[in-house]
Image 1 (cartoon, rainbow, N blue to C red):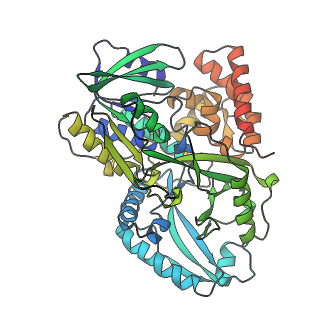
Image 2: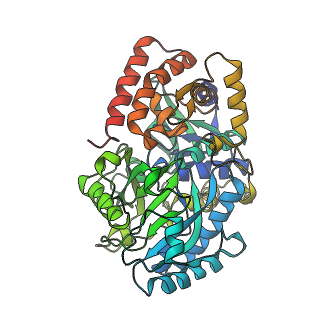
Image 3: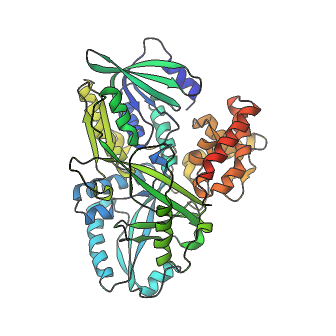
Length: 520
C-alpha cells in the first residue's frame, strides 16, 4: 500500500474507473472492498487520512445495540448481531468477545435485564458471543470490585464485541488494495463534472503535491460521513441536507478504575443514553454523549458539559470517582445520522440504520449506519451503484472474506496483537534494521519499527497518522504521545524523504493537535 504507486495508477492516460468512492471511513472502505471483490475497477479518495474522522473515534464496540432493542428496532438489531458475528469471524485479530456487567440498584433490575438480554442472545443465533446470566451482588463485586456497593442488588452479565476502529480501517484499506483497488489519502475532491446531465467525473487536488486531476467514472459514490451534504451540494446546490450531526465524547482513564476484564454498562443516564466503561489497550474508555451539532468539522472538540457529564455519571457508580487529572485523553467524534423527514426528533432517537440516496444526475450517497454494520451497508450500496452505472451484475462474496492481518488465537495481552499476521513481519523488521527494536514509548509499549512499518506498508504520511491511527497513542495517553512526536517525525522524514524543517513543522503541528486531547 504505497501512495506513490497509487498516484501513478491515477495518472495513467485514458483511465476510466467503474466506481470512484469519495470518503475513506468505515462506509467508504467497506464499499471499496465490496466493489473491488465484485471485479469493478475501483478508486477510493480520502481528503485527509483514512478514518481521520468519525471512524477512528467510536466507543470501540461491535454490538447489536441493546438500546435499539429497547426502542423496538428489531430489524436493525438482527442485522447488527449477524454482522457482529461476521466481523469476529473475518478479523479475529481486531474483534474480540467482551463481557459487560449491568449493575442493578433496584430489586427488579436483574430479572428485567436478564429477560431482555436473553432475547438479545436468542436473536444472535449461532453467531452469539455468549449467554446472558444474572449475577448476585457478591459475584458482581468480584468481577468489578470498584463498583459502588451501597444499594447494589446484583448485576447481569451479557456479551458483545470490542475492536480497534482505526486499525480495522487500515486493514480494510489493505484488503481493498490486495483485491485490485486503488486508494489514496490526502486527495481532496473539489468539484464534480457532468456530461448530458449525469455526474461522470471528480475534480481532485493532491494535498501533498498540489497536483490537480480530473478523474472519470461510470458511478461516483459519496461516502463522506458527516460531510455528505457538502458533496451533494456540488451536484445539486439547492439540495436539502440529509444528515444530522451528533457529537459523542469519550474519556480515557487508567485501568485501575475498572481493573478486571469486564466492561460496565449503565443502562439509563440522566440524558437517557447508556454509558459504557470499556477496557481497551490497557486503559478504560468511558462514554458517550449525544449532543446535536450545527455543522461538521474534522477535529471536533469535547464541550465542558460533556466532560462533566461523563465524570459525574461515572463517579456515581465507582468507589473512586474519576477527576479531570485522571483523564489520559479526551476525544470527540461526530455521528452522521440519516436526518428524519419529521422535525424535532432528538439525535438519540434517530435510527442508526443507513440510508442510500441516488440523485437525478446519478450520484449515489450513503449515510447513517454504524461500524458494526459496515459490511452490510457496503453490500447494499454497491448493489445500488451497480444498477445505477449499469455494471455487470455480480454476487457479493464479502460475508466470508478474511480481512488483512487475519490471525486466529491472538494473545490480547500482547500490545502488538492488533497487527495480527503482520506482527511477525514488524518484529523481523525490528531485528534487521538498526535501532528499530528500541522503544519509542516504554509506557505504551510502542517500538520504532511500528513507525517505519506504518510509512512503508500502511500509507502513513504524518506524525498524526502514526500516533493517532496506526498506533493509538494519542487516544491512550495524549501527553505521552507528545513526547514521542520528535522521534516519530525523524523516522518518518527519513522514510518519506523530507528535511529537518518538515520534522519541526510536524512536531509543532502535532503538539497543537494533541493539546486538544489533554484536559487542563
